[in-house]
Structure formats: C-alpha cells, structure tokens
Amino acid sequence: MIVLGIETSCDETGVALYHSERGLLSDLLYSQIDLHRDYGGVVPELASRDHIRKLAPMIRQALKDSGLVPRDIGGIAYTAGPGLIGALLVGAATARSLAWAWQVPAVAVHHMEGHLLAPMLEPEPPRFPFVALLISGGHTQLVEVEGIGHYRILGESLDDAAGEAFDKAAKMLGLSYPGGPKLSALAESGKPRFVFPRPMTDRPGLDFSFSGLKTFTLNTLQTTAQSEQDKADIALAFQDAVADTLTIKCRRALRQTGLKTLVVAGGVSANTQIRASLRAMAEKEKASIHFPRPAFCTDNGAMIAYAGCQRLLAGQGEPLAIKAKPRWPISELASPG
Ligand code: KG4
Ligand code: ZN
Image (cartoon, rainbow, N blue to C red; front, side, top):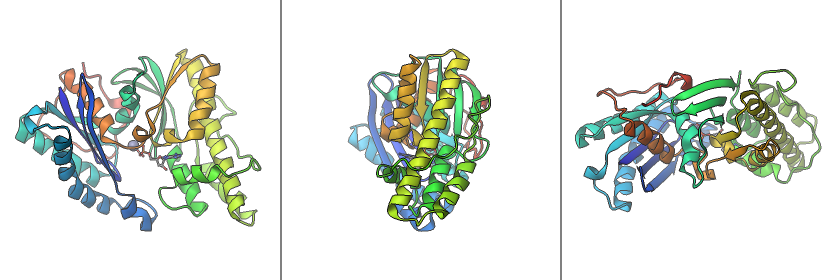
C-alpha cells in the first residue's frame, strides 16, 4: 500500500509517500522559518495561509518525483493534532477532500505518535516494548510503549517543553527564532564556567520542569558583561543542564520499567549533545537506543505517512469527517487492531 502523508501542524509543510514494503518513495519539506522570523515566533494565521499556498503543489510534486498517479495511492494520512487549529485544518481538509475524490480511506494521525514512530523509518528500527522520550517544541514526555496505540505516560513537563525552553533561552541570548539549533551552535564555543540546576532530579518521579532554567539563564546573563564568550558559556551551561536532566530521567524510566530499549524523538532529539549524553547512558545501562535521522527529528511528512500506514493496514479508516484537535493527549489513542 502507498500512503500519502501530510503534516501541517505548525510552521512546516511536510508531504511524503510511503510504500508499506519498499519504504519512503518521496519526502518533501517546506519550512516557513523566513516568514515568521521577524515576529520572533510562529504567527498562526500566516502559518495557515502559507500551508494553503504550498500544500497542493507539493503533493503534485511528490507524485511526479516518484512517477506515481493518484490511482496508485491507497490511503491518506494527515496530522489531525495537536497543533495550531488553522494550520491543522488546512492539512485535514486537503487530505479529506483528496481521499473523497480518489475514493481511498483517510486517517487522522496524532502528531506525537508520528514523532514517536519516526525511528521506525531507520534501517535498524526499535522493537516493542520500549520507553520513548518525546522532546519537541510543545511536548516533553516519557512514554511506556507496548505497541502502536498502547501508550502509558510515565512523566511529562509540568511547565515549558524542552524545545520551548531552548527557544526562550535562545531569545534571551539574542538569537533569532527558532532558537534551539542556534543556541546549540553557540554552545559549541562555550567553556564550562557556569553550572545550572538539574530541575526535579533530586526527588523521585519522572516529571520535568524547565521554566526555572529560563530564570537562571536570565539571572546569569545579567551578572556578566554579555560578551559573545559570556553568551556561549551560558548556552553551554543551559544545554548541559537540559541534557543531564533528560539523561537522569531516562535512566530512571528504564530502571523503573525494566525495559532495555529507549527511543528518543521530536525536534530537540536532533541536538548532538543530548544525543551523545543519552547514548552514553544507554551504553552503561546495556540498553539499546534509537533516534530518527536528524531530518526526521523535526516535523516532517514521512513520520505521518508511516504512522498512518500502520493504522490503515490494520483496517483503521474513518468516516467522512474533518478532524482537527488543537489539544489531544497521546494516551487517548486506541490501538489500530
Ligand atoms: O518536533 P518539532 O519540530 O516541532 C514540534 O512538534 O514542536 O520541534 C521543534 C523544537 C523547537 O523548539 C526547536 O528549537 C527544537 O525543537 N530544536 C532543537 C534543535 N533542533 C530543533 N533544540 C535544541 N537543539 C537542536 N539541535
Ligand atoms: Zn513536532
């Protein structure tokens, strides 16, 4: 079965074609970063309009690139939430309309399930059951995963998501949106000079809190001359604290569940220092660790096509209704079978 995947939950338009036996046939991504940069963050209305402008031509391009025609497509998967409602509706309405016109099933995909399953697109995919650390701009969650649709939240952020904390700290350091990758680049020239706290690691449990690190970043910045070196040193201290906190909690989750496989996904999992710190921990714990390739850590259509394909193969399709949910807990998902 060939599935068309559509991702429009935030500021990236993603379109992919996934073949259930042959893998990815096409994967196109258009980022709206330039559009939102002047505003310092995503402007929802601009995002929706830009998805409308880009989506149909990208679908046409994906079909053309892979030498396919609409009758080759067996189903359509679209991100139905969580995300920006206007942006989601563009993908949902397009997917539903095409499914109706092409007489194929459509399936509403949960954006975080897409992230969670992204490592399945790699040559050595993880095997169920596993612990998943989801770290994106909107979510920070530790999930015990028994299979597709069997998700138990072990812990989550009580305030800012990891990506959100990166973006806010980056803004304080004068870096432009989206700041996460820029802060990480700046940290490379940082020297180990400051030590930031590791929030909530001194008490039991698997929840996170990152908002205090923002205040710590600001306070530290104000005690320096704010030279480029000062900023790089602060970026490094911030990144160290996030990496270390995530690592401590993942170790705890592995030990608590007794599972020996860790999956890490979502935009922040592209961070090299976080990847290295988690990898070293997994090695010590004799656990296997799986990340998506960096391009599939951040938003993309491939992960949506893959997740939707698994649900469509299991016979899950939905009645003709356009579904978009700005808020949607992953623990509410049912298994497709
Ligand atoms: O998963 P994603 O693309 O979108 C959401 O679902 O939110 O994640 C975006 C987040 C942003 O906060 C961005 O700054 C962060 O991931 N991010 C990074 C890196 N690459 C993306 N944060 C730290 N280091 C990176 N290399
Ligand atoms: Zn995402």
